[in-house]
Structures are given as C-alpha cells and as structure tokens.
Length: 311
Picture (cartoon, rainbow, N blue to C red):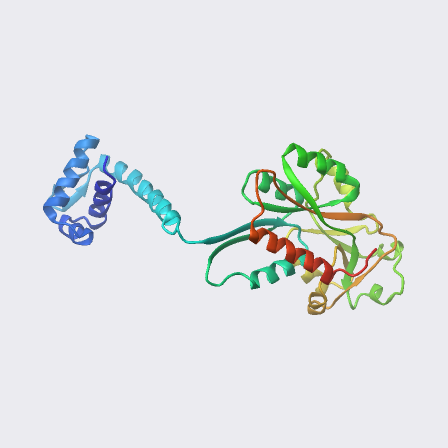
C-alpha cells in the first residue's frame, strides 16, 4: 500500500471533492483519481462513491480512513522527531529530591546553557523509589536518591541489583524550618518537648527498599509532634509555613533568599541526630555527558554555598 495514496484519500475525505483535494495536494485531478482507484484495488474495498449529494464515504471507507489518519499521524511524529537529526541537541534528564538546594543549582545550570544550541532538559522532583525506577527504566539518565544513613545497606544492595552506579553528593543532619513569627524562633535552644503542640509538615511518600511502608514511616516520620500534614508538592510546604505559624518542617537546607521570601528561619535542634545522604545514581552502561557533569558541578557548588555547618 502506497503511503502517498493514503494521504490522497484522507485529503479527499476532508474536502469531499476530487478537484479541491487535487488543488490542495498540488496534483492533477486525473492523477488523484488514478491514485484513489489504485488504493481501492489494493485494499479490495470501495472508499468513495458518488451520489446525488456528491462524493460520499462508504462504510468500509470510514473504517479505512480512521486507521489511515492514525497511521499518518504517527508517521508525522516520526518525521518531526528526526527532521533535525543533524542538528546538535543538548539533552539531560534528572530526578531529584524535593530540596531547595537542587532547584537553585538547576537554575544556575540553566543560566549557562548555550543559547545557540537546541536543548531538551527534563528536571523532576520526586521520591527515592520513583527516581530509582525512572533511571532503571531508562526514562531518566540521572537520579538523586535521599535516604537516612541507617538504611544505606538496603539502598546499596538495590543499586547493585539494578546495576546502578552510586556516588554520595552530600551528607547532612536535618535542620528545622519555621516561620519567623513562630514563638520557637525566638528560643535560644529548642527542645523536643517544645514541638508537642506544633504541626509537622512532611513529604508523604517515604521509601526504603525491602522494608514495609509502616516500618519506613515509623523510622522516617518525627516522633516529636502529634499533628502532621503530609504534602507531595514542594510549593505547598512554603505556603503552609508562611501562613500557619505553628508549623515546622525538617529540611536539608534552604538558601537565605528563599527563607527571606517566605519569612522563614532555620534552626538546628540537638535532639534530632539522624543523618541523611543525597546519592547520585545512573546506569552502569551510561556514560556521563559534559552536560551531566556541568549540572553535578552546580549541585556541588550549591552544597558549599547554601549549607552552613549543621553538624
């Protein structure tokens, strides 16, 4: 079956006119009529019929045209995908934790993109499980996994099973993020019992390989507060912290300009001693590109710029 003839049939169906379709296709009416006849002979069906109302589509023709339009749409996508195959295109895809120092590092990275080159950059904030799956399934090339150091052996085992390279980017202890109007912000030393009446904001999708979710939540969620709001979108946490003074959140670190924007402050709490790691992952058969290394460099720069000594 000739793809060009298929295109001709679709155009005739759209216009319901051989003459108009021929004009749109920059071909002659006799040539178009011969092409439709050849297509009908190949398919052994009648696509069009003439009546007192003009050119009509047969039942068999309706079925064929439905498939033909879908097929032509797919062909157009393929052509579009490869029409610029000789053009240099910068590509990068990464999944990261919902952490401010990553978003600021990514912004710095984006500022340095070559303005004369095409680029396709994908940046996704998600949890550790989704980052691992996305990289393993080759939907993303890079991932950053955040986990509590206690669970390192579980993650390392999974990385080896999934044939993933893994490199530690950062190790830290969480600090408390609270509103400047929160009474705790004025305390010289915050104690665990000070949080009993506060509302903790936390991300609601913790994950540790090989452990039941209930055990993961017990280990990850704070025992210091009896009230908790779980969020999945990072922007919501800043709105809550800004608008609800008795809320708090455990974070890695946040840039000063972000804290000032939402009227927030970071406080170190001696009773929260859990340490965490941010670990870069990528497939063992994947080779880091120049662009990948540039972003990783920006992440390391952000680590040194935005983290003060929490430990």
